[in-house]
Image (cartoon, rainbow, N blue to C red; front, side, top):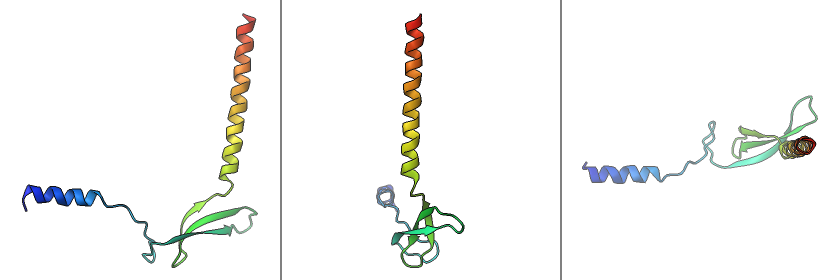
Length: 92
């Protein structure tokens, strides 16, 4: 094999995209399913293999709500710090 062919082979390999594959059955189709933990009121979303049901990832459905709450908290703290800084500069 000459160097020209080697470069073509390397370039062809680098263009491939990753395909998610189930570790248990080799399936390549996935779905989201809701589940509830035993003894808990909270529900979780699972990404699971559509063929055999093996879970691959857990998604917390309340995450956007908590992220929004933290964002509002940070904005509130930022506003209070800005007001405090203004008070301190105005008093000098």
